[in-house]
Image: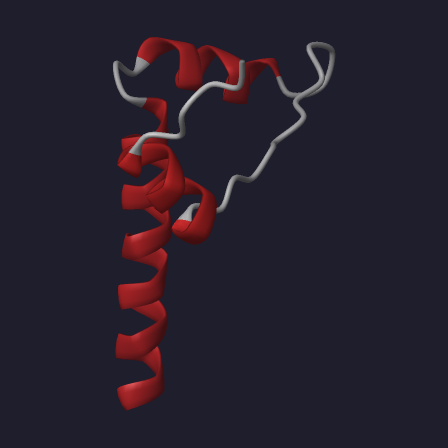
Length: 62
């Protein structure tokens, strides 16, 4: 018997994108430690990207 797909799973399959980030413990330990210290890694990374987008927009407007 096949598992019934929930509406959330259907929505995720249609609209979600996932990105993977490899970090090496020998050369990128600072990044690993920072990511492990924040309670919400995805939110933290998204906020950094949005800040960069805003800074780029401000730079283009000048």
